[in-house]
Image (tube, rainbow, N blue to C red; front, top):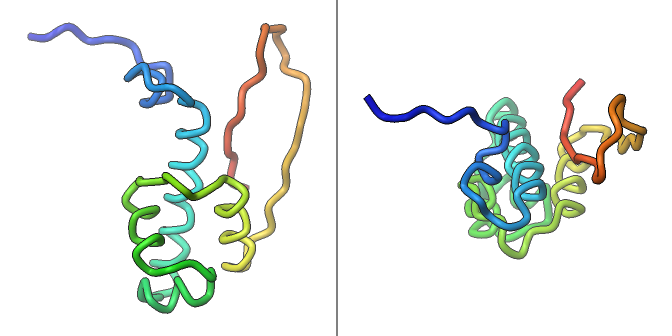
Amino acid sequence: MGMVEKSSGNVYEDLGLPNAGEMQVKATLAAKIGEIIKHRHLTQVEASEILGIAQPKLSCMLRGQFRGISEAKMLECLNKLGRDVEIVIHKPARSRAAGLTRVVFA
């Protein structure tokens, strides 16, 4: 049996990739965008027209390839798909040197 390591909860951080927090946020946002598109039975062409981004770029985003797509653009996509987005900034319960960024769906 191989050795099992405890996950940090962020696969990008576990892999030692730079910008792990940003990648985790983008992955979560992209998954939600994909879920909404599927729920609304939209084709990628229809969704790309609603979102105002090229279909190949949407396809890449939904496959986890985020290069050239900002978090702000992904939040705008959620708005265009009829979702409200709230950004909440708060002090953590425990003190740490740096804060964390995460996405929570209500």
